[in-house]
Length: 406
Image (cartoon, rainbow, N blue to C red; front, side):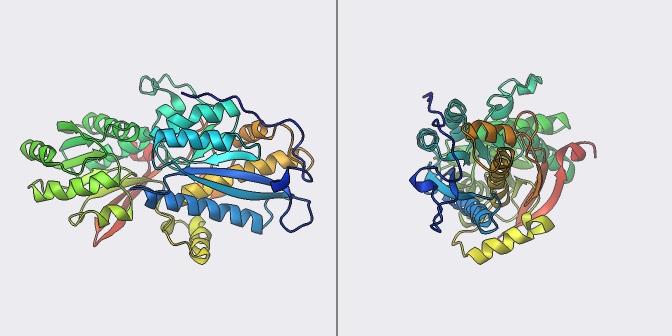
């Protein structure tokens, strides 16, 4: 993995001199520019989610500038496309970290992409905060299942809860609420999918459920005849898929066409309107997603109204609220750093922003926003959705720790 050593350039990033792009566009020359980078799949099969992420971050930046959230600072969003590819994410992180005005990066969507970006962000001391990554390894290390948890990168944070929580929620929801007793589990061999499926299996079997078969597929597969045949022979009550909607949509339809007439269930990677578009037989399928539906939150009313008024072409999708909160976290960290330095950005602004991120606490779109000692969100709310009449309908929301005791 490429490790860079670029650091914030010497010289105070004052409110009057931050380079040519640091000048206030109003012409008075009094404001510094702080760039917030963004990395997401803006093209390709996952672009529906990526565009929602980009637009929601853009809205946060526009609102911060409009209300002069940080006096003396103008925020600028710089979005880059990773196409859901780890190497592209690493290149984007390198490019953004090389600009001294970038004090934080929002993204990425995919946990596998995050693995390629984390060391670049760490080496450059720049905050990286994802609204969507859920793999526990990213924050707590590979031994988290043994309860040997160690923070991996001091610069990495996320506003999405982990698959330790989400996969376990799915397993418990399937067993206790859906009354499922047997499940066939498939994953796409990617970091996110494998972790989600593993957590589902652990919780489902812990409660008394039986895994009647497992299978691995490629995320690029669209012909699932062999998998359908195996799943049909296993006669499960439910098929669980660890992966994302471009493959799970066709998989669900082919399962039902092949006689496996049971629901397909997955995580937040399936929770997209595009899943229903790709699947004529999506009715009755399930997906979980982090947080509660923003449409049900009083705290999200302004976000929803502002997003509509902004006229974005694409929907905010699954991660709109968590992206706004991730972006706002960086903005709040910058605000604290500026206030602590007599209204100026200090020489070591990046380091101080990282330090301030650990103390960020505010009421956001998705509820209370703060981070634990690993950089994980303290909000462990999960929602189960079911496809009903060509739409995702929320069926049950709970903070997993509370659900676990019910």
